[in-house]
Length: 448
Image 1 (cartoon, rainbow, N blue to C red):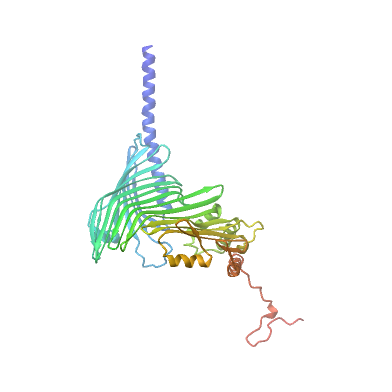
Image 2 (cartoon, one colour):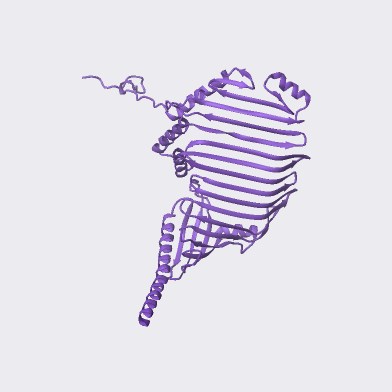
């Protein structure tokens, strides 16, 4: 029995020992394959790898990758691309963090190095640590030291900042924070405190996900802002893409005036997601639609036609703010209904509505009386309210019907312009018999 126990124990230890070698070997081999594939695939485009040295090992690997960042759409041969070098070391021993852990540093090279060192001094670099999780997610931590420098008569102070990044083939999560940024010079000053960025994208190419930017306070020579927040959210549900951006400011002070609780929200809903994805892809490969093939140009027209016939809603659902004299709020929405017959007709399918509410003493009594006299505004407790709508060729302001002739004419002209873009007319080929030579005589062959 004792021999059997020893045999089982030896077998378990042997299995663990083999696994302890197989996992690092697989990790090292995978890293070597992936890095070489990336370097070989990045020979053209905006990010170009021009030097790659990798030393692979069973338990540890290291290397250097130098790359250039330039605008591949810029044809200027004199363009001086930014050059950087990434140095890294990798441990292939698994841990609770994942199958491999690594340290890295980003160093500018060449003229980029000289330019950066001239501004912020020598030795500054971006560095961090990371790991590849068992679930395939890449986790990285970023650290940037404090920066104090002067440039063109302006001094800058940037406190140390930290960030983290989690990514896979399609999604990315990025968090970054900075306690203070100060710039002074030429009679001006800027002081920002408590900056934070949180980005969680499910599809970084299409932009679906959430982004948050916050600043505790901003102070310049002429204004001050407290509690600035910018949020955006883009979702894709059943081939429908919707996006919403909201901005808010707790306190805004300018030239002795103060506004509180400012809010602005803009939204786009109901976009045909596959069409948007096609536009993004073509825009990327054609330098913003400037260098398209005939097939790409035709596809763009088809995609735009689909977007306009499937419908969408665009607008500003919320605008509001308050001050010492009162409060104002407004909204504006434009809706393009789906075209049942597949024909673009803004005059028929476009709808719009909105309202403006002003309370308090933002308007003096004379202005209030004038607004009421026009019939475009109604009196409400503490203020005025104006409402407008356009639907089925009918334009209304509050309860007053207006002449919509100019609106319908403008929409009809827009329909013609869209039709000419989507289906450009091709000039008919001229018959050979109708082509005259320089003497004005017909060049058609004479029948025999």
